[in-house]
Length: 248
Image 1 (cartoon, rainbow, N blue to C red):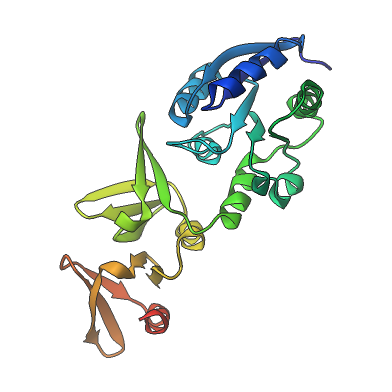
Image 2: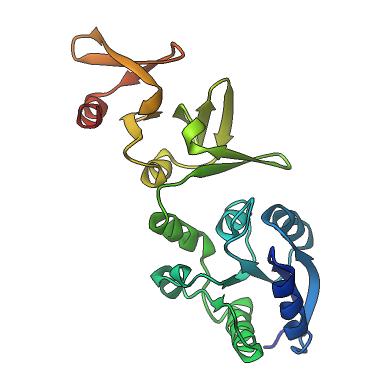
């Protein structure tokens, strides 16, 4: 089976790169270019609305990286990554059988990438981009910011502004001063990608940024609470207390 028209979106913040890519795509007969995006926010909107078959996605962009764009999509399309940075050409791409274009690339290399992507589209090759994203996060830690979708808006939270994170069923409540943002993500996943020198799992339901810790108080026999600079109190488990003693 061969796709008659592969509906495609290109995402790159550099105009010369987009222009070259458009010229290359015009040489591939079964490609239909839906639109081009200049940043990650445009990409999230366009991909959600147009539902392309393939996205050619630059990794290193201002505002949102290519990886962050995918994180914000509920059902990501097939992706061909595009990058000028060979440090991103890591084992994660090979392990998950995802294709990437290392700039500058040729028309023939782009044709090859589309042939590989077409195998995924017709179901001859498995595709697990969410597993890939998890793997990528484990390579690029600690996180410097967390993204939260709130309706049609994307909130970018610098990790330095996070006071603590609280488990709430299937969500993590991210507390930043007077605001709370809900993100559908497991606490274990967040714990694994946050800076372990700052963020400590003090309780099964709480991850604390110790820069906001004022003191630890004994609440009862073998029971302690964390007193934060803003006066809030968080429970500390025995395991959490052992972790805190190592860091403080």
